[in-house]
Amino acid sequence: MNRTLTISASILFVIIGTLLLTFTDIPILLGWAGILFFGFCALVEVYYFLSGKDLDGYWVTFDKNNIHTRYKGCDDGEHFELNHNIKWDHIREIFITVDSARYSKIPCWVLSAGNKEEVLYFPYNAHGNKQIINELSERLTDFNKSKAQIIINDALKISNGEFQVWHSKQ
Image (cartoon, rainbow, N blue to C red):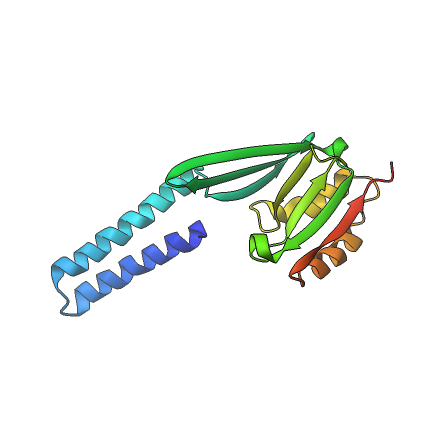
């Protein structure tokens, strides 16, 4: 869930609880319990936000040499983190793939070095994905941003398939 939404909702519930406590006949214990619970939720979210603690899910980041992905999750109560990367100069093909049977119709980026060993795969809605088109156009020769956006928009409309966004002419 979006951290800003959680903070806003918690603060709203604290305000509502305060107003209910002040202007209605609800039991004082119930009013204070709600205020304390949602106030604590807001404080925890603000702490995580300010301390830079990451949300679960996929993240994509870029530097001058690599594209990095990180997945943070929980399986049977055990928290884990997976990290992968691919060097910019190794990328030979870029696809958008949609497999409704596997990922609930969430399109995924596939950046490949042209072999099965070096592939970066992450959901289209990963945190940090908004910069990917600009990053790709800056670093990959012959990457046509407007053509890629048309292909991506078409891919987002279907439930199954694979669309080649770019391939190296080397």
